[in-house]
Length: 492
Ligand code: XMP
Image (cartoon, rainbow, N blue to C red):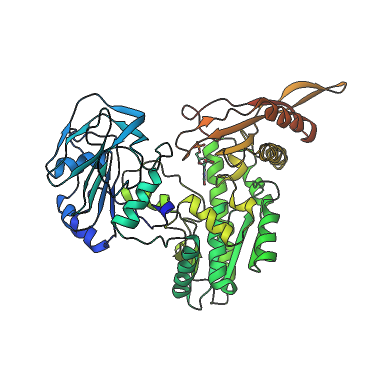
Protein backbone atom coordinates (compact mmCIF):
# COMPACT_ATOMS: atom_id res chain seq x y z
CA UNK A 1 0.00 0.00 0.00
CA UNK A 2 2.75 2.34 0.96
CA UNK A 3 4.52 1.76 -2.35
CA UNK A 4 1.31 2.94 -3.98
CA UNK A 5 1.73 6.11 -1.87
CA UNK A 6 -1.26 5.36 0.31
CA UNK A 7 -1.06 5.33 4.10
CA UNK A 8 -2.09 2.02 5.62
CA UNK A 9 -2.43 0.55 9.07
CA UNK A 10 -2.42 -3.08 10.17
CA UNK A 11 -5.27 -4.10 12.45
CA UNK A 12 -6.25 -7.44 13.99
CA UNK A 13 -8.94 -9.50 12.25
CA UNK A 14 -11.13 -9.32 15.39
CA UNK A 15 -11.83 -5.62 14.76
CA UNK A 16 -15.59 -4.94 14.80
CA UNK A 17 -17.59 -3.21 12.09
CA UNK A 18 -18.20 -0.31 14.50
CA UNK A 19 -14.48 0.09 15.10
CA UNK A 20 -13.82 0.04 11.37
CA UNK A 21 -16.53 2.65 10.83
CA UNK A 22 -14.95 4.84 13.48
CA UNK A 23 -11.57 4.66 11.75
CA UNK A 24 -13.26 5.45 8.43
CA UNK A 25 -10.68 3.87 6.10
CA UNK A 26 -10.89 4.47 2.34
CA UNK A 27 -10.36 0.76 1.72
CA UNK A 28 -9.78 -2.53 3.50
CA UNK A 29 -7.46 -5.36 2.55
CA UNK A 30 -7.82 -8.82 4.05
CA UNK A 31 -4.42 -10.43 4.14
CA UNK A 32 -3.41 -14.00 3.48
CA UNK A 33 -2.48 -16.37 6.28
CA UNK A 34 -1.48 -19.97 6.93
CA UNK A 35 -4.88 -21.24 8.14
CA UNK A 36 -7.74 -22.96 6.33
CA UNK A 37 -11.29 -21.67 6.73
CA UNK A 38 -12.03 -25.22 7.94
CA UNK A 39 -9.64 -24.99 10.90
CA UNK A 40 -11.09 -24.51 14.35
CA UNK A 41 -10.62 -21.86 15.29
CA UNK A 42 -10.05 -20.12 11.97
CA UNK A 43 -9.45 -16.34 11.83
CA UNK A 44 -12.76 -14.73 10.93
CA UNK A 45 -14.16 -11.27 10.30
CA UNK A 46 -17.22 -9.38 11.55
CA UNK A 47 -19.48 -9.93 8.48
CA UNK A 48 -21.07 -6.49 9.00
CA UNK A 49 -17.76 -5.06 7.69
CA UNK A 50 -18.77 -6.11 4.15
CA UNK A 51 -21.92 -4.01 4.54
CA UNK A 52 -20.14 -0.74 5.37
CA UNK A 53 -19.81 0.27 1.72
CA UNK A 54 -16.01 0.40 2.07
CA UNK A 55 -14.15 -1.29 -0.82
CA UNK A 56 -12.57 -4.60 0.25
CA UNK A 57 -9.80 -6.61 -1.40
CA UNK A 58 -9.32 -10.15 -0.10
CA UNK A 59 -5.98 -11.84 -0.77
CA UNK A 60 -5.48 -15.64 -0.56
CA UNK A 61 -6.95 -16.64 2.82
CA UNK A 62 -8.72 -13.27 2.85
CA UNK A 63 -10.28 -14.14 -0.53
CA UNK A 64 -11.45 -17.54 0.72
CA UNK A 65 -12.88 -16.04 3.89
CA UNK A 66 -14.79 -13.46 1.87
CA UNK A 67 -16.14 -16.18 -0.43
CA UNK A 68 -17.26 -18.33 2.50
CA UNK A 69 -18.80 -15.49 4.52
CA UNK A 70 -20.77 -14.12 1.57
CA UNK A 71 -22.29 -17.47 0.62
CA UNK A 72 -19.83 -19.02 -1.85
CA UNK A 73 -18.03 -22.37 -1.47
CA UNK A 74 -14.46 -23.07 -0.46
CA UNK A 75 -13.20 -26.54 -1.32
CA UNK A 76 -10.78 -28.32 0.95
CA UNK A 77 -9.37 -30.29 -2.01
CA UNK A 78 -5.95 -31.06 -0.65
CA UNK A 79 -4.54 -30.16 -4.07
CA UNK A 80 -2.91 -26.78 -3.83
CA UNK A 81 -0.69 -24.54 -5.90
CA UNK A 82 2.62 -23.29 -4.63
CA UNK A 83 4.87 -20.81 -6.39
CA UNK A 84 4.80 -19.82 -10.04
CA UNK A 85 1.34 -20.38 -11.55
CA UNK A 86 -0.33 -19.31 -14.78
CA UNK A 87 -3.40 -17.16 -14.37
CA UNK A 88 -5.94 -17.14 -17.20
CA UNK A 89 -8.12 -14.08 -17.58
CA UNK A 90 -11.78 -14.16 -18.51
CA UNK A 91 -13.99 -11.12 -19.22
CA UNK A 92 -13.53 -7.53 -18.18
CA UNK A 93 -11.95 -6.73 -14.85
CA UNK A 94 -11.56 -3.52 -12.87
CA UNK A 95 -8.47 -4.88 -11.14
CA UNK A 96 -6.73 -6.11 -14.28
CA UNK A 97 -8.10 -3.89 -17.09
CA UNK A 98 -5.24 -4.17 -19.55
CA UNK A 99 -3.59 -7.42 -18.59
CA UNK A 100 -2.74 -10.05 -21.21
CA UNK A 101 -4.82 -13.24 -21.35
CA UNK A 102 -2.22 -15.22 -19.42
CA UNK A 103 -0.08 -13.87 -16.62
CA UNK A 104 2.42 -15.46 -14.27
CA UNK A 105 1.41 -15.08 -10.66
CA UNK A 106 2.54 -16.46 -7.31
CA UNK A 107 0.21 -18.80 -5.48
CA UNK A 108 0.41 -20.46 -2.08
CA UNK A 109 -2.81 -22.22 -1.17
CA UNK A 110 -4.21 -25.60 -0.18
CA UNK A 111 -7.93 -24.76 -0.27
CA UNK A 112 -9.58 -23.07 -3.25
CA UNK A 113 -12.76 -21.10 -3.84
CA UNK A 114 -15.02 -23.52 -5.76
CA UNK A 115 -18.02 -21.23 -6.29
CA UNK A 116 -18.16 -17.45 -6.04
CA UNK A 117 -20.98 -15.91 -3.95
CA UNK A 118 -24.04 -14.53 -5.78
CA UNK A 119 -23.39 -11.14 -7.34
CA UNK A 120 -19.72 -11.89 -8.02
CA UNK A 121 -18.17 -12.34 -11.46
CA UNK A 122 -15.19 -14.65 -11.87
CA UNK A 123 -12.55 -12.79 -13.87
CA UNK A 124 -9.60 -15.20 -13.73
CA UNK A 125 -8.78 -18.81 -12.96
CA UNK A 126 -5.81 -21.15 -12.75
CA UNK A 127 -5.44 -24.91 -13.00
CA UNK A 128 -6.32 -25.61 -9.37
CA UNK A 129 -8.18 -22.38 -8.56
CA UNK A 130 -11.38 -22.12 -10.63
CA UNK A 131 -12.08 -18.79 -8.90
CA UNK A 132 -8.66 -17.13 -8.86
CA UNK A 133 -10.19 -13.64 -9.05
CA UNK A 134 -13.79 -12.70 -8.25
CA UNK A 135 -15.30 -9.23 -8.29
CA UNK A 136 -18.54 -7.58 -7.29
CA UNK A 137 -18.15 -4.16 -8.88
CA UNK A 138 -21.40 -2.75 -7.48
CA UNK A 139 -20.51 -3.56 -3.88
CA UNK A 140 -16.79 -2.86 -4.53
CA UNK A 141 -15.80 -6.26 -3.12
CA UNK A 142 -12.87 -7.97 -4.84
CA UNK A 143 -10.83 -11.06 -4.08
CA UNK A 144 -7.70 -12.64 -5.52
CA UNK A 145 -6.36 -16.09 -4.72
CA UNK A 146 -2.80 -15.21 -5.75
CA UNK A 147 -0.38 -12.82 -4.10
CA UNK A 148 -0.23 -9.47 -5.90
CA UNK A 149 2.20 -8.18 -3.26
CA UNK A 150 5.13 -10.43 -4.21
CA UNK A 151 7.60 -9.45 -6.91
CA UNK A 152 7.16 -12.71 -8.81
CA UNK A 153 3.57 -11.83 -9.67
CA UNK A 154 3.61 -9.94 -12.96
CA UNK A 155 1.67 -6.66 -12.71
CA UNK A 156 1.04 -7.36 -9.00
CA UNK A 157 1.67 -3.81 -7.80
CA UNK A 158 -0.46 -2.57 -10.70
CA UNK A 159 -3.38 -4.61 -9.37
CA UNK A 160 -2.97 -3.02 -5.95
CA UNK A 161 -2.69 0.44 -7.55
CA UNK A 162 -5.91 -0.21 -9.48
CA UNK A 163 -7.74 -1.30 -6.39
CA UNK A 164 -6.60 1.71 -4.39
CA UNK A 165 -6.73 4.44 -6.99
CA UNK A 166 -9.60 3.32 -9.24
CA UNK A 167 -11.86 1.11 -7.14
CA UNK A 168 -11.42 2.98 -3.85
CA UNK A 169 -10.61 6.38 -5.39
CA UNK A 170 -7.69 7.06 -3.03
CA UNK A 171 -5.17 9.62 -4.27
CA UNK A 172 -1.45 8.73 -4.12
CA UNK A 173 -0.48 11.48 -1.69
CA UNK A 174 1.54 9.59 0.95
CA UNK A 175 5.07 10.62 -0.04
CA UNK A 176 8.28 11.30 1.84
CA UNK A 177 7.67 15.02 1.52
CA UNK A 178 4.15 14.76 2.88
CA UNK A 179 5.37 12.60 5.78
CA UNK A 180 7.98 15.22 6.68
CA UNK A 181 5.55 18.14 6.38
CA UNK A 182 2.92 16.38 8.50
CA UNK A 183 5.37 15.40 11.20
CA UNK A 184 7.00 18.83 11.36
CA UNK A 185 3.57 20.40 11.89
CA UNK A 186 2.62 17.82 14.54
CA UNK A 187 5.90 18.21 16.43
CA UNK A 188 5.56 22.00 16.44
CA UNK A 189 2.02 21.76 17.76
CA UNK A 190 2.99 19.21 20.43
CA UNK A 191 6.12 20.96 21.66
CA UNK A 192 5.20 24.64 21.55
CA UNK A 193 8.02 26.61 23.17
CA UNK A 194 9.25 23.74 25.39
CA UNK A 195 12.64 22.06 25.22
CA UNK A 196 13.28 18.64 23.74
CA UNK A 197 15.87 15.97 24.48
CA UNK A 198 17.02 13.19 22.17
CA UNK A 199 19.46 10.32 22.70
CA UNK A 200 21.42 9.52 19.56
CA UNK A 201 22.68 5.96 19.35
CA UNK A 202 24.49 6.05 16.02
CA UNK A 203 21.65 4.02 14.49
CA UNK A 204 19.31 5.04 11.69
CA UNK A 205 16.11 5.47 13.69
CA UNK A 206 17.33 7.87 16.35
CA UNK A 207 19.22 9.88 13.73
CA UNK A 208 16.18 10.29 11.49
CA UNK A 209 13.90 11.07 14.44
CA UNK A 210 16.38 13.72 15.60
CA UNK A 211 16.68 15.16 12.09
CA UNK A 212 12.88 15.51 11.88
CA UNK A 213 12.71 17.24 15.25
CA UNK A 214 15.58 19.48 14.16
CA UNK A 215 13.59 20.58 11.15
CA UNK A 216 10.58 21.29 13.34
CA UNK A 217 12.06 22.92 16.46
CA UNK A 218 15.85 22.73 16.02
CA UNK A 219 16.73 25.55 18.43
CA UNK A 220 14.76 23.85 21.25
CA UNK A 221 16.50 20.49 20.80
CA UNK A 222 19.44 19.04 22.72
CA UNK A 223 20.90 15.75 21.53
CA UNK A 224 22.89 13.42 23.76
CA UNK A 225 25.35 10.90 22.46
CA UNK A 226 26.80 8.57 25.08
CA UNK A 227 30.04 7.01 23.86
CA UNK A 228 30.16 3.67 25.65
CA UNK A 229 33.49 2.70 24.11
CA UNK A 230 31.56 0.00 22.27
CA UNK A 231 30.60 1.99 19.18
CA UNK A 232 31.73 1.33 15.63
CA UNK A 233 34.78 3.11 14.24
CA UNK A 234 34.24 6.85 13.68
CA UNK A 235 30.62 6.63 14.83
CA UNK A 236 30.91 9.41 17.41
CA UNK A 237 32.78 11.73 15.04
CA UNK A 238 30.21 11.21 12.34
CA UNK A 239 27.32 11.98 14.68
CA UNK A 240 29.10 15.09 15.85
CA UNK A 241 29.92 16.21 12.31
CA UNK A 242 26.34 15.71 11.11
CA UNK A 243 24.40 17.12 14.02
CA UNK A 244 26.71 19.86 15.23
CA UNK A 245 28.23 21.16 12.04
CA UNK A 246 25.66 20.26 9.41
CA UNK A 247 22.43 20.69 11.37
CA UNK A 248 23.69 23.18 13.99
CA UNK A 249 22.03 21.30 16.84
CA UNK A 250 23.27 21.40 20.43
CA UNK A 251 24.97 18.05 20.99
CA UNK A 252 26.25 16.76 24.30
CA UNK A 253 28.90 14.14 23.59
CA UNK A 254 29.37 12.13 26.77
CA UNK A 255 32.72 10.36 26.68
CA UNK A 256 31.87 7.60 29.12
CA UNK A 257 34.25 4.91 27.82
CA UNK A 258 36.29 4.66 31.03
CA UNK A 259 33.23 4.21 33.19
CA UNK A 260 31.90 1.45 30.92
CA UNK A 261 35.20 -0.44 30.82
CA UNK A 262 35.57 -0.12 34.59
CA UNK A 263 32.09 -1.52 35.14
CA UNK A 264 32.72 -4.38 32.71
CA UNK A 265 36.09 -5.42 34.14
CA UNK A 266 36.22 -9.12 34.91
CA UNK A 267 32.63 -9.79 33.75
CA UNK A 268 32.23 -12.65 31.27
CA UNK A 269 28.59 -13.70 31.61
CA UNK A 270 26.67 -12.43 28.53
CA UNK A 271 23.51 -11.42 30.37
CA UNK A 272 25.50 -9.70 33.12
CA UNK A 273 27.39 -7.70 30.48
CA UNK A 274 24.16 -6.62 28.79
CA UNK A 275 22.69 -5.58 32.12
CA UNK A 276 25.73 -3.51 33.09
CA UNK A 277 25.84 -1.74 29.73
CA UNK A 278 22.09 -1.04 29.77
CA UNK A 279 21.99 0.29 33.30
CA UNK A 280 25.07 2.43 32.95
CA UNK A 281 23.72 3.90 29.73
CA UNK A 282 20.58 4.99 31.55
CA UNK A 283 22.60 6.44 34.42
CA UNK A 284 24.75 8.46 32.01
CA UNK A 285 21.72 9.74 30.16
CA UNK A 286 19.95 10.53 33.40
CA UNK A 287 22.92 12.59 34.60
CA UNK A 288 22.75 14.77 31.50
CA UNK A 289 18.98 15.15 31.76
CA UNK A 290 19.24 16.17 35.45
CA UNK A 291 21.96 18.64 34.64
CA UNK A 292 19.90 20.27 31.91
CA UNK A 293 16.92 20.51 34.26
CA UNK A 294 18.82 22.23 37.07
CA UNK A 295 17.59 25.75 36.38
CA UNK A 296 14.01 24.47 36.41
CA UNK A 297 13.43 24.83 32.68
CA UNK A 298 14.81 21.50 31.52
CA UNK A 299 13.50 19.52 28.57
CA UNK A 300 9.91 18.34 28.85
CA UNK A 301 9.92 16.10 25.79
CA UNK A 302 11.97 13.09 24.83
CA UNK A 303 12.36 11.91 21.23
CA UNK A 304 12.11 8.17 20.58
CA UNK A 305 12.77 6.38 17.31
CA UNK A 306 9.85 3.95 17.67
CA UNK A 307 8.90 2.41 14.31
CA UNK A 308 5.59 0.97 13.10
CA UNK A 309 6.70 -2.67 13.51
CA UNK A 310 7.41 -1.95 17.21
CA UNK A 311 3.92 -0.48 17.52
CA UNK A 312 2.31 -3.54 15.91
CA UNK A 313 4.37 -5.93 18.01
CA UNK A 314 3.53 -4.34 21.31
CA UNK A 315 -0.11 -3.65 20.44
CA UNK A 316 -1.29 -6.88 18.86
CA UNK A 317 -0.70 -9.15 21.82
CA UNK A 318 0.33 -12.12 19.71
CA UNK A 319 3.35 -11.13 17.63
CA UNK A 320 6.26 -12.62 19.52
CA UNK A 321 9.87 -11.67 19.92
CA UNK A 322 10.14 -8.14 21.14
CA UNK A 323 13.69 -7.21 21.94
CA UNK A 324 14.28 -5.44 25.20
CA UNK A 325 16.38 -2.49 24.16
CA UNK A 326 18.53 -0.59 26.53
CA UNK A 327 17.69 2.52 24.55
CA UNK A 328 16.25 4.97 26.99
CA UNK A 329 13.70 3.06 28.99
CA UNK A 330 13.36 2.71 32.71
CA UNK A 331 14.20 6.27 33.62
CA UNK A 332 13.43 7.22 37.24
CA UNK A 333 10.06 8.84 38.02
CA UNK A 334 11.39 12.33 38.72
CA UNK A 335 12.66 12.39 35.15
CA UNK A 336 9.36 11.86 33.44
CA UNK A 337 9.19 13.03 29.86
CA UNK A 338 6.43 13.28 27.37
CA UNK A 339 7.36 11.27 24.29
CA UNK A 340 7.73 12.48 20.73
CA UNK A 341 7.68 9.55 18.33
CA UNK A 342 7.75 10.99 14.82
CA UNK A 343 8.48 7.63 13.13
CA UNK A 344 5.78 5.52 14.73
CA UNK A 345 3.80 5.23 11.49
CA UNK A 346 6.78 4.23 9.38
CA UNK A 347 8.54 1.10 8.25
CA UNK A 348 12.34 0.94 8.16
CA UNK A 349 12.52 1.59 4.42
CA UNK A 350 10.39 4.68 4.73
CA UNK A 351 12.56 5.89 7.60
CA UNK A 352 15.65 5.60 5.42
CA UNK A 353 14.03 7.55 2.59
CA UNK A 354 12.84 10.25 4.95
CA UNK A 355 16.39 10.43 6.34
CA UNK A 356 17.81 10.94 2.86
CA UNK A 357 15.24 13.60 2.10
CA UNK A 358 16.24 15.39 5.32
CA UNK A 359 19.86 15.46 4.19
CA UNK A 360 21.40 12.86 6.52
CA UNK A 361 24.56 11.29 5.07
CA UNK A 362 23.99 7.96 3.35
CA UNK A 363 26.49 6.32 5.72
CA UNK A 364 24.06 6.91 8.56
CA UNK A 365 20.87 6.33 6.59
CA UNK A 366 21.90 3.01 5.07
CA UNK A 367 23.68 1.59 8.10
CA UNK A 368 23.00 -2.03 8.92
CA UNK A 369 21.26 -2.69 12.25
CA UNK A 370 23.53 -2.42 15.26
CA UNK A 371 22.59 -3.82 18.67
CA UNK A 372 21.95 -1.44 21.57
CA UNK A 373 24.85 -2.85 23.66
CA UNK A 374 27.12 -2.30 20.66
CA UNK A 375 30.35 -4.24 20.26
CA UNK A 376 29.71 -5.58 23.77
CA UNK A 377 27.59 -8.40 22.32
CA UNK A 378 30.30 -9.31 19.81
CA UNK A 379 33.11 -9.73 22.30
CA UNK A 380 32.95 -13.18 23.81
CA UNK A 381 34.36 -13.17 27.35
CA UNK A 382 35.67 -10.08 29.09
CA UNK A 383 35.11 -6.68 27.48
CA UNK A 384 38.23 -4.57 27.89
CA UNK A 385 39.39 -1.40 26.22
CA UNK A 386 42.08 -3.34 24.31
CA UNK A 387 39.73 -6.05 23.12
CA UNK A 388 37.10 -3.48 22.09
CA UNK A 389 39.78 -1.69 20.07
CA UNK A 390 40.79 -4.91 18.28
CA UNK A 391 37.17 -5.64 17.42
CA UNK A 392 36.42 -2.07 16.33
CA UNK A 393 39.35 -2.12 13.92
CA UNK A 394 38.44 -5.58 12.65
CA UNK A 395 34.79 -4.58 12.20
CA UNK A 396 35.86 -1.57 10.17
CA UNK A 397 37.86 -3.80 7.80
CA UNK A 398 34.96 -6.24 7.33
CA UNK A 399 32.45 -3.47 6.64
CA UNK A 400 34.84 -1.61 4.37
CA UNK A 401 35.52 -4.65 2.18
CA UNK A 402 31.83 -5.60 2.09
CA UNK A 403 31.00 -2.08 0.95
CA UNK A 404 33.74 -2.16 -1.69
CA UNK A 405 32.29 -5.40 -3.02
CA UNK A 406 28.88 -3.69 -3.29
CA UNK A 407 27.26 -6.12 -0.86
CA UNK A 408 26.58 -3.86 2.12
CA UNK A 409 22.94 -3.04 1.38
CA UNK A 410 21.88 -6.52 0.36
CA UNK A 411 23.24 -8.13 3.52
CA UNK A 412 21.16 -7.79 6.66
CA UNK A 413 24.31 -7.53 8.76
CA UNK A 414 28.02 -8.10 8.20
CA UNK A 415 30.51 -7.67 11.01
CA UNK A 416 33.44 -9.08 12.97
CA UNK A 417 33.29 -11.12 16.16
CA UNK A 418 36.06 -11.49 18.75
CA UNK A 419 36.07 -14.84 20.54
CA UNK A 420 37.72 -15.53 23.87
CA UNK A 421 40.49 -17.81 22.63
CA UNK A 422 43.96 -17.16 21.39
CA UNK A 423 45.92 -19.52 19.21
CA UNK A 424 49.48 -19.92 18.05
CA UNK A 425 50.44 -18.61 14.67
CA UNK A 426 53.54 -17.65 12.78
CA UNK A 427 54.16 -14.26 11.21
CA UNK A 428 57.44 -13.21 9.67
CA UNK A 429 59.97 -15.24 11.57
CA UNK A 430 58.19 -15.17 14.88
CA UNK A 431 55.60 -17.12 16.73
CA UNK A 432 52.41 -15.25 17.57
CA UNK A 433 49.77 -15.96 20.19
CA UNK A 434 46.79 -13.87 19.24
CA UNK A 435 43.03 -13.77 18.64
CA UNK A 436 41.13 -15.07 15.64
CA UNK A 437 38.43 -12.86 14.09
CA UNK A 438 35.22 -14.48 12.97
CA UNK A 439 33.47 -13.03 9.97
CA UNK A 440 29.69 -13.02 10.46
CA UNK A 441 27.55 -12.05 7.46
CA UNK A 442 23.86 -12.90 7.18
CA UNK A 443 20.89 -12.36 4.93
CA UNK A 444 17.50 -11.87 6.57
CA UNK A 445 14.22 -10.01 6.24
CA UNK A 446 13.48 -9.32 9.87
CA UNK A 447 16.23 -10.88 12.03
CA UNK A 448 13.80 -13.53 13.32
CA UNK A 449 15.49 -16.02 11.04
CA UNK A 450 18.67 -15.58 9.03
CA UNK A 451 20.91 -17.45 6.65
CA UNK A 452 24.69 -17.18 6.47
CA UNK A 453 25.66 -15.18 3.43
CA UNK A 454 27.50 -16.98 0.65
CA UNK A 455 30.20 -14.33 0.31
CA UNK A 456 32.36 -14.64 -2.80
CA UNK A 457 35.77 -16.27 -2.08
CA UNK A 458 37.68 -13.23 -3.28
CA UNK A 459 35.79 -10.99 -0.83
CA UNK A 460 36.53 -13.40 2.04
CA UNK A 461 40.14 -13.44 0.95
CA UNK A 462 40.56 -9.68 0.90
CA UNK A 463 38.85 -9.34 4.28
CA UNK A 464 41.13 -12.02 5.76
CA UNK A 465 44.29 -10.50 4.29
CA UNK A 466 43.50 -7.05 5.59
CA UNK A 467 42.48 -8.33 9.04
CA UNK A 468 45.83 -10.05 9.49
CA UNK A 469 47.83 -7.18 8.00
CA UNK A 470 46.06 -4.22 9.55
CA UNK A 471 44.63 -5.29 12.88
CA UNK A 472 47.10 -5.73 15.70
CA UNK A 473 46.33 -8.68 17.94
CA UNK A 474 44.81 -10.84 15.18
CA UNK A 475 46.55 -13.83 13.58
CA UNK A 476 43.74 -15.97 12.16
CA UNK A 477 40.36 -15.54 10.43
CA UNK A 478 37.34 -17.86 10.45
CA UNK A 479 33.93 -17.68 8.77
CA UNK A 480 30.67 -18.41 10.58
CA UNK A 481 28.45 -20.67 8.46
CA UNK A 482 25.59 -21.01 10.94
CA UNK A 483 22.05 -19.95 10.10
CA UNK A 484 19.47 -18.77 12.65
CA UNK A 485 18.17 -21.03 14.07
CA UNK A 486 20.16 -22.84 15.43
CA UNK A 487 22.56 -19.90 15.90
CA UNK A 488 21.71 -16.30 16.67
CA UNK A 489 22.97 -13.44 14.53
CA UNK A 490 25.15 -11.94 17.24
CA UNK A 491 27.78 -13.84 19.23
CA UNK A 492 27.98 -13.12 22.90
P1 XMP B 1 20.15 -12.21 17.53
O1 XMP B 1 21.59 -12.17 17.88
O2 XMP B 1 19.26 -12.47 18.72
O3 XMP B 1 19.79 -10.74 17.05
O4 XMP B 1 19.85 -13.14 16.39
C1 XMP B 1 18.66 -10.39 16.29
C2 XMP B 1 18.78 -8.94 15.89
O5 XMP B 1 18.68 -8.09 17.02
C3 XMP B 1 19.85 -7.30 17.17
N1 XMP B 1 20.12 -7.24 18.61
C4 XMP B 1 19.83 -6.17 19.38
N2 XMP B 1 19.33 -4.95 19.07
N3 XMP B 1 19.48 -4.31 21.35
C5 XMP B 1 19.18 -4.03 20.05
O6 XMP B 1 18.76 -2.90 19.78
C6 XMP B 1 19.98 -5.51 21.73
O7 XMP B 1 20.26 -5.74 22.90
C7 XMP B 1 20.17 -6.48 20.69
N4 XMP B 1 20.65 -7.76 20.68
C8 XMP B 1 20.60 -8.20 19.40
C9 XMP B 1 20.92 -8.02 16.36
O8 XMP B 1 21.93 -7.12 15.91
C10 XMP B 1 20.12 -8.60 15.23
O9 XMP B 1 19.87 -7.66 14.20
